[in-house]
Length: 103
Image 1 (cartoon, one colour):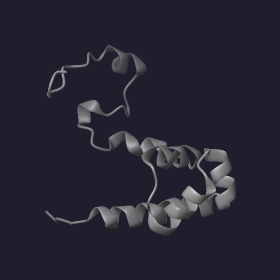
Image 2: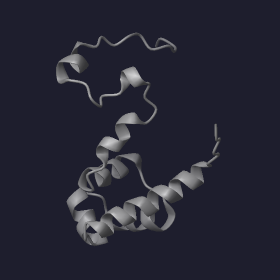
Image 3: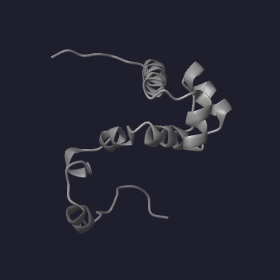
Image 4: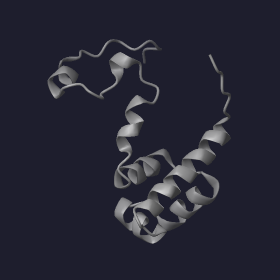
């Protein structure tokens, strides 16, 4: 088994490069992607330069670049993933009580 250690900065840098590559493959300018996604042009430019972006804006970009479904598996146990499940199965799943403090 191989263990790869990545820092949050490593992942952030890889994501910015992947999103930029996706944008270029779809022949979109930064301005075009910003307008289609509703993300401000300065935010998009900062993301492509530094990797910093609000999570909601990242998801908006992913929607336009057709990779939003990639986020379905993030931090999900197999039984929690929505991928490959029917709408009836998702709706039938009863939410269990989450551990934590009651307010």
